[in-house]
Length: 191
Image: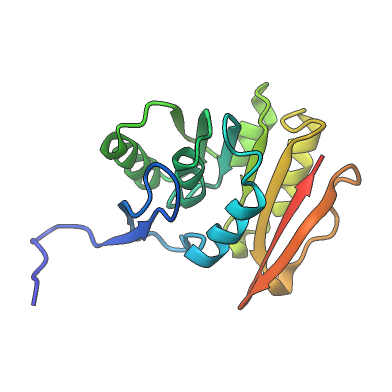
């Protein structure tokens, strides 16, 4: 039996499933509501994105564990911007980037919606996976469209609770892939 050191914080682990960092294990903190995208969903998503991920500028919005952003980096994305409002979460993302010796990422600790409302950056691929109970998906997608963060040819991955499907997304987004796993719905859109 392994004992935890006194005052040490419990950690969760995720495994990168493909690319340069394949099989690397990364730690992320125990935070209420944080649920990394599972291996099976990530494998499906990155099969969908296989032809587009190399060289892509990616945004991991509401990044949590960073599973999607790390997977994108591992598979050849040129840059990933990680956004989360938790200092604990963003510190873990920075630590994991150091462990991977990856310098092609930016980590920002701020409210995702406020950041979207003020940024001028554009991205090729955006991962939108807000906490299921927070009701942030529709607002985030509207800001992505309004601020020009996505443009023609951009791809958007949206993950949400199955019983909370939001069909009120920008009309210019074309649904290209749609699957369910357990109580999760995950979709890929193209602008």
